[in-house]
Image (tube, one colour):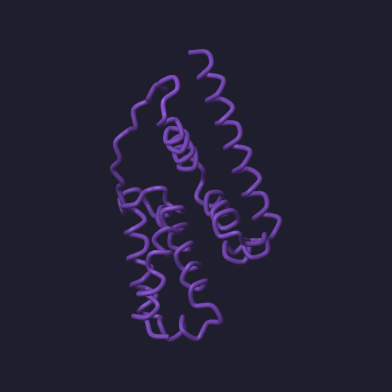
Length: 166
């Protein structure tokens, strides 16, 4: 398989994967672009891998985890604060609001926990595979997933309580 064939068939799936990791379509585009540049430079090694797509996804996860490890002046991300929206009773857009709430909660998770959730539940990988991709032990990977789910549950419960008290 050539690099061009790989990009032609897998780019959209890699983009969806990056959106799940970053939670931001624009950052996801940057992540995919930088990953694909690196994959092209190492294409011989990638093509020799048993599963080239898994190899590229691992590159993407590693790049995502490394992105913000540098000092603060290397990258500056500008984002507008999302205004708190008040739900409208019986609004058909409530599902969209719930989805936005979940995206905000996911965005607040540490990178390793978010990556572990994406690998476990979006990619449907076993704990052993998640640990392998994250470069940690199985127990650590399970810990990331457990803490992330506990954080999400607590945030959703808090939103329900504060939403009822309004």
